[in-house]
Amino acid sequence: MSGSGEFDEEEGWPVVPSEQAEAVLNHAALHDADAFSAFFAVTVAISEAHEMGIQPPGARIDDEAAGTWTIDLPRGHGLARYTYTGKPPTILNEVVMPGLD
Image (cartoon, rainbow, N blue to C red; front, side):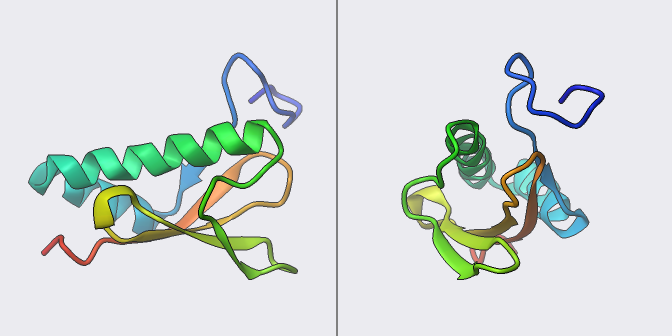
């Protein structure tokens, strides 16, 4: 992202995890490589879609006024909830991965 807060094509559309989402990512990294991969796959899908000004396939709107969406993680690993306002960054609010203990 450039210093002005605009989308920077070279850097891509930023998807920033909340503290909760980052904690799930860290746990997945330590305990389940496939879950870790699923987390990154959905992050890339969100980023690429938002670069094109669309939502990724399978995303469901939760609250249109708030710009919150839910998307399933690949291979049945759970789901992710994110906020998209049309301007970067997209905030990955919550990741739920029931298979991680």
